[in-house]
Length: 387
Image (cartoon, rainbow, N blue to C red; front, side, top):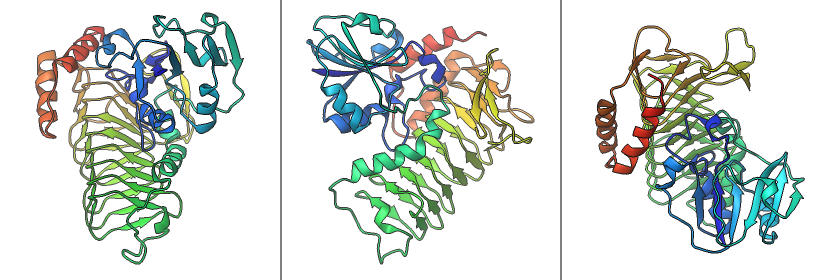
């Protein structure tokens, strides 16, 4: 049976990180949600998402299907329970379908996968990790790096760091092939450190785990990294970073602070860009993303920046700032705490053709092209954004 990760009808609560991707492709820990399910099940995983995104994902083969809520983080106990399901049975928790087995030839949308559609509903008594809001990405990152590290290193030999660099707890450091390391210090006593293929760590870097570095990513000279931080593939990082996730192909290449934050793909933080992650009164941070209803985040929340966005040099972001997709952020003083998709400066609207031109230029810097499919998704989002 094919495995399908389905978005929930509440996928927009994860804005700005579900604009150009399904929930399944959000990165937290070492893996994306989809990669983790594939690693644990040993099967290819398909995706069911919003209609405007669905063309970016291949169709699953015909036949019976296992449907899995994409907001739920995979673990061995849940996988075992799912694999015991029979056709027309569903695992349900808090009124939502966690997983189910669909009969062959049944058509589904993200709005129709509900408990009432299945003949038998089995209550789930497992404690589940779910990514419902964007700040859950950095809040769960510590646990997910640890779990992913154990999963990716199980029964694998790796280059030993013992007696080579004088690092702390080298047995908790995993180095993939092709990693280039200059004189630096790594402390894995507080959490594991994973260095992906062909990653580059320049001189003077200081790293404290848990930390995950994706394939081809670069830490520039003198970078200070605190756990729990993830750099996805082909990121460039510098300055000071703490408890943050950069999903992939993004740059924070210069001095400045990034803390308790999430940065999407194809972003660039200009030199000196910094964010606050704690209110001056040390009170709970609330998020309303420009709307009337507020949601408590916790005591710490920094910058949540959507894909294809950029900030000018020395940009200052306040606590709990949301920057949407394809924003070009510049101006005097602190940036606004809510920047809608396709914002130019602080208040104006990006001209669509210019946005596409600039995104294509940034992708070329990392030897990628902006595809027609990418442009169609961005066009859809642009038309949804209120001028």
